[in-house]
Image (tube, rainbow, N blue to C red; front, top):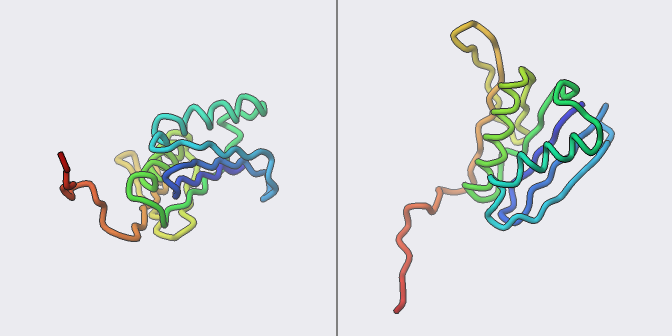
Length: 129
């Protein structure tokens, strides 16, 4: 089974579980600026409700291009973390997937986010009194 994650929009997270490229279940959650807090519990609940175990997952696909800096980073980080812990490949659908080895010579894949623009986290905002 494949876990698909899409957080390229600030206001939603999409998770799909596929078996042989056929959709088993999908969930769209509207999460204005709360993807980091809600994505993992959403994935957990989706798996439990559909009686799918983590060990049934054989691959993770993640949208890694487009969207805001923060929302894109949330999806990619969760996909990479799950892939590493489960020992399964993570594929970036926008490209930039690297195969690396840890100190025990175990290979795993890491997806890099591809940003459309520089983050705006250091831009000062004009405050009007």
